[in-house]
Amino acid sequence: MNTTRFCLVRHGETNWNVEGRLQGHTDVDLNERGITQAAQMARAIKAINLQFDVLYTSDLQRAAKTANAIEKLFNTKAIVDSSLRERHLGILQGITTKEAPQFDAELWKSHISRDIHEELRGGESIAQLAQRVQKALEKIRLQHLGQTILVVSHGGTLDMMYRLASNQALDAERAISVPNASLNWISHDGSSWKVDRWADTSHLDTLALDNLDL
Image 1 (tube, helix red, strand yellow):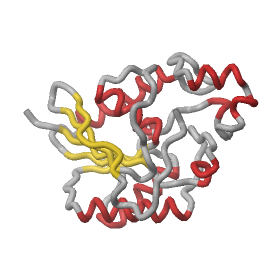
Image 2 (cartoon, rainbow, N blue to C red):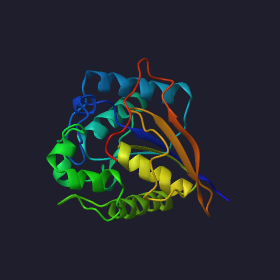
Image 3 (cartoon, rainbow, N blue to C red):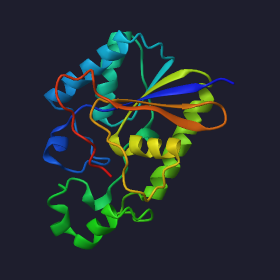
Image 4 (cartoon, rainbow, N blue to C red):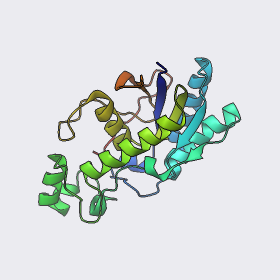
């Protein structure tokens, strides 16, 4: 049975990551450290001689510019797919995690309790995110059966991929970290998903920030 492998990459650092500001669909650029992290990540993929067949990226620039480091080093072109975006965080987008409890205490409580049907006033619920991510993963898998696929995406989206691959409940407390520019591996053997390795940042020369977009 052919195994399809995914190497999942979280985008490099942004100033909003540093500020603890929730990004969601807001199109925030990489900062200088993020650009450096992207280059280090691409070189690490080269160093392990990863023979990938195709590269996908979210359309948000922090992911697309991270993918660009891979494009340059491997002389390839990423397939841009908006279904790989971060969760839309509604009116919480642009708010820091320190400001959020004062901004709307009830909404923030609903958010951090992982109410899977909370849409954050114009945003996307956890249940909706799960459906979107599952559909995106399955579409990509079926198009590249038995191949190795690089995907550059976002912390909340990759956390959802981990949950789907490990059968972790959508409302369960987050079990893993998703650092900037980390390499994360899942695979599908034709019948089920599994998590192979997670949160590898050994290629980075400084500590990477964890994901805030729950």
